[in-house]
Structures are given as structure tokens and as C-alpha cells.
Length: 317
Image 1 (tube, rainbow, N blue to C red):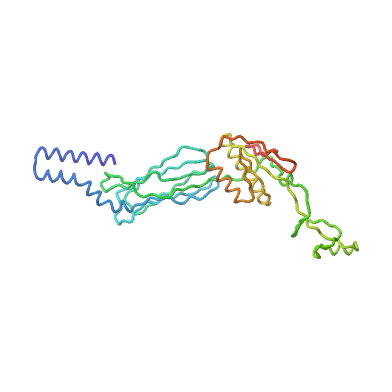
Image 2 (tube, rainbow, N blue to C red):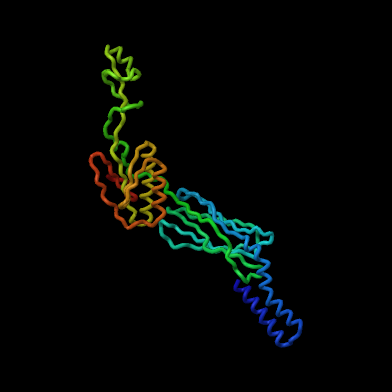
């Protein structure tokens, strides 16, 4: 645009000098034509500029290291497009709190165009994309007028599952006792003499014949200790990634066994009952910079199993 304005200014100056030197009707018409040419260009460009729009879309959550796409669509509804578009897209990682990186795009006369961004997913965090500015230029390239813009894309790069080494025996260590299950069935049973009120379908008929006395199978359910996973993210990024990927592995393990647990992070505690709870916790955690909160000690009794995840060191109680 600077070059075009300089060229137009030089042409206008040359026409003015020519008119002052000769003072003819032809030079006067040339000067007037150059003076009104930008206005004419702007008027002809306005229908295309006013119907132009820039929009961001796409960007679903993705596992670390996998590819994803963010789509920028620019176009107009007028049959004759503007000379060109000038778009600036800004993106940043909210978890790493990095400065926004701006990408400047220049798209020449087209009614519709798509520009694809491929976010870098080698680091965890929430990536935010937004259109910082969007302008369309007239046919002479002298004016850049803002156009409508919409949409912003936010996607989260989620951790992969990394098995802690050494691997903790959470399932075995969290087992407590078995107690009678009030209703329903269970794979675990306890044999006992028949009591008045027991359901007939609980009677163990083969054993009853041998014992000459009614024996019933009483369903048992396993009681577990409360599991608490404690994490600390105040170290450098490689340590943060290691902690979160070990947390992902242990979460998959516990959720796969339908074992609810808690995550202790700084002053916050998240209660995890399923995959949805864990995903919401991760997205909330990765959408802001790490807080300056040291991991608080978790006070638990004999009914609580506390495990602290350490980077590259596995888990310790």
C-alpha cells in the first residue's frame, strides 16, 4: 500500500507540475482525473468491501503430537471482489503464557478463499486463535477499510498417557474390606446359613444338599480407600508435561475400573468420577498459566490413599 500511495503521489505531483508549466486544457483534465480517481476507485470498491467477511473456524481438541487444522475463510458476496485483503491472525498458548504470535496474510482479488493454519501441538496447553485485524483494499490499493470479522478458535492440546516408572499399585493398595451388598448381584459372594427373609434365588442348592441345611450366597462389594493424586506444576515445562502425562495414565487406569478419585493441585481439589470430569479438569488447568501455588500436604486417615506424582520419577505415597 505504501508503494501504491507513493506511486499515486508521484503521478499527481507530475500532473500538477505539468499543468503549472503548460497550463493547457489537456493537463487540467489529467490533473482533475488523477484527483478524482481515488474517489472513483473507492466508490466502485465499496459494494465488495461492505459485503466482505473474514471468519475463523475449526480446531477441535487434540492429543499432543497429533495434527489439527484451523481454517480462515475470507470472501465477499459481490460479483467483483476487492483488490486484495489484509488479514492479521494472532495465536498464543494460554498455559505457557507465551506472547501472541501474529501472522499477516495478503489475499489478492478473489470472491472466496480459505487459508489453513496447522497449529504446533508438540507442547501442551490451550491454543487461542483470533483475527486481530481484517481489511479490504480498493482497486487502486490506496485505502484499507475494516471488514466484518467473526469467530475465534480455542483448542486444547491434551497430554498423552505415560506410564509411571516405577508403576504404583493403586488398585491393590486402595482395596480395603468387603461388606454385604444391600441389593443386586456381585461376582464376589460369601457363603452363610440361611436366615429368615433371604431371597430364594440366593440359596446355593448344591451346597445345601451336601450340608442338609439351607446355605445362601450373600453378594459382597469391595470397599476402597479414597484415592488422592497430588500434582505440582511449578517446575519447568518438561517436568509439567511428565506430571500431566503420568496423571493421564493413572486417570485412565482408575476410570477404567470405575474408581472415583480426587486430584489435588495447589489449593484446589477436583473430584473425578468419570472421563468427562477429568477432561474438564484438564481443559481448565491448561487454559491458564500455572499458578504460584505449592502443593499442599493432603491430610488423610487410614481410609485415604495419597499418591504424589513426580516428573520422570513415577509416583510415591
